[in-house]
Length: 355
Image (tube, rainbow, N blue to C red; front, side, top):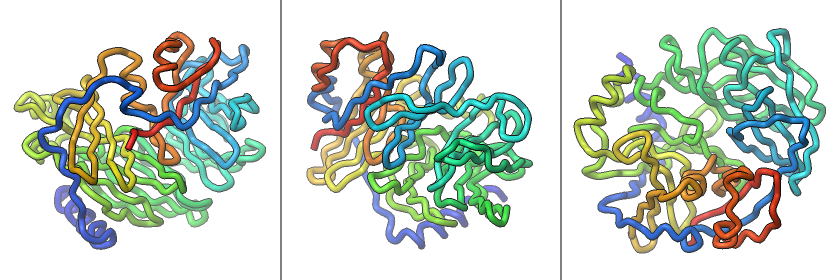
C-alpha cells in the first residue's frame, strides 16, 4: 500500500512539473583536487561570535536580505544572528520545556516574518518574531519530523518520519491543517538536511533520496524538475521499501552504488551535487557540464578538501560552508582566493563551481 501511494505522488508531481529531464552521470572521470580550479569563491565573512557564547558545530545557515542566521549546537544549542559583515547582533536561546522554549533544535527555517524551529524532544514547532525574536506561538504535533522549509508566512513543508505520517506534509498555520503526501519508507529514511537547497531568489528544491529526483517546492505541491541518473551505479529500487538499517546495509553490500544525491546546485551551464559512493562514509562531489556532457567526480584527500567539497548547504544558489579557526590553513585559503588575516572566528564561505 505504501508503494502504491508513492507512485501516485510521483505521477502527480511529474504532471505538474512538465517533462522529466534526466541528468546522466555515467562513467565519470576523476577530477583533480586543486580546489582553485574547481571553485570560485563569491564571498567570505568571519562571524564574530562573542566569547560569552560557547558555540559548537554550525549546523545550518540561512539568510534574510540583510542578515546571516546560523544554527549552532554548542552548550546552549541556539540560533545566532549577524549582519552582512559578520558582526554579531543577537541570539535566540530559550532552553526549557515551557511555552516558547525548546530542549534541542532539530532544524529551523524562515518565513517572511518569523523564525520557526522544531524541537523533536517535545514534538513542537515554535514561532518567533523575526524582528524582535519574541515568542509568537507553538504547534504541538502528534508525529515526528526530520526536516522542513518555510514557504510563505502561513505555510511550511515538513518531512515526517513517523510511521503513521511518513512522507511530505504541507502545513497551513492559519487553519492548523496538514496536507499529507505519503512516501515510501526508504525515501524518508534516506533524507538528510542537505536534501533541501535554495536558489538566488529563495526558491526551494528537494532532492529525493534513492530516486535521485529533484523537485521544485511550490505551495501545496512538488513539481518534478529533473532526475540524476547514475546508470549502472544506481542502487536497486528495493531500497525504497527499506526502513531497517540492516536491510539497507545488505543492499549496499550487494554492489558498488552511487546514491542519495544532495546539495544540488544547478545553472544553465552545469549541475553540481554531492553523493555517496558505496557507503555513507564516502561522500564525493559530482559535476556535470550541461554543454559538453562531460562528467567529473571529486573525492576529498584531506579534511580541508572534505569541508569544501561537501558543503554545509546550498543557499542563495551558492555552496555554503563554515571553516572553524582550527581548520584555517592560510595557504589553503590563498589557493581559494581568500585573503584574510589570522582570525579567531569561524569563516562563512560562499562559492560556486567554475564554469
